Image 1 (tube, one colour):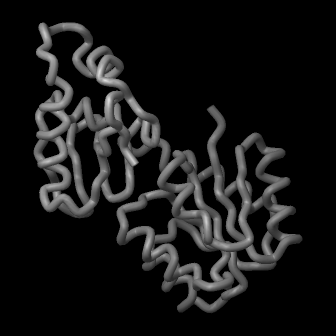
Image 2 (cartoon, helix red, strand yellow):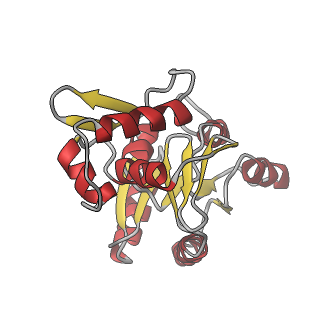
Length: 222
């Protein structure tokens, strides 16, 4: 599967140049002139890298990245910006960026930095993420923001299945097959009971509504 890169740059000529160069290297790329749809895309798609300018319409890039980090998004970020002072670079990195490239830039250097960052981050422990939920697959840990939540193995597998299929309605039969693997004798409400217990653990205040029921069908993470 190709790595998916989101590019945010308000100068159209730079946007088109970088988008073309990345696609030529084999990446899937979606470019935007502002941040209007970026958070929605990060929520709904697996994005391997976010490249963004700092001087953007409506929002400064550093503030936007700070907001993403506060909400739990861990997508790697490269700033591509005309702000050249060392203090600007420090500010960007402290906000949660992984690299900082100053305009004017060499396209070949940008591509090397992109390749190195994607390789470095892909070698980290495998995780699943949805909004502020982060699942560490190897250690079977779940974090909501900065708080660890204790789940049973079944609840962990149920949540991971929902995240892998976020925004898709999964029927009860589908969940029984993929999570329980037909290894047990089920009662009619097996899935309902498990989902209820999971929701009580990941959303005890009932304020985040991660998991929605679809009447007569099943459940959807959104």
